[in-house]
Length: 166
Image 1 (tube, rainbow, N blue to C red):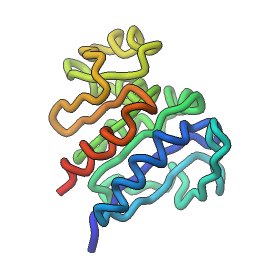
Image 2: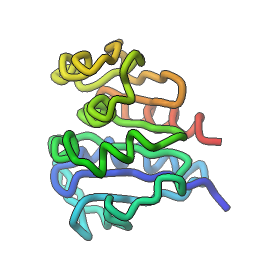
Image 3: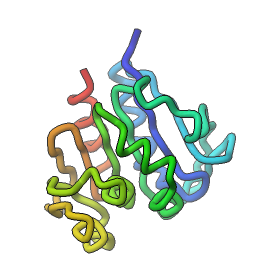
Image 4: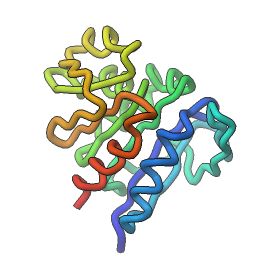
């Protein structure tokens, strides 16, 4: 059985490239990708993409996945204080990743305290206020946690996650 990767996207206004590029990487390496969102059967990207949602975020069984990836975009704000999203981030014991605005979910869940991380530069202070060490890199890896700064780093972000999933 292939390893499973969960990608969590906002119901509306996820960042298309931050979803599509890592997903292509994961699938090219034989990983099974499950798409999760909140309250919708189809999510809509900021650039007009449409994605079928496989499972509602409230139904996710964390232990089923080798990696959990929070995709960025303006809609990601919906998850910043969402109890279910924060619980998923807190309770994941395997690879945990987030890109663009997504690392704020990890920071709010308390998992970036004392960890090196990156985020969209506009969210640098929000990341640091929760104890993360902002590095400003395109992609940052600290142990089992992978963070990315935005669309330009989406492919590298996907590759780093794929390298860590065993």
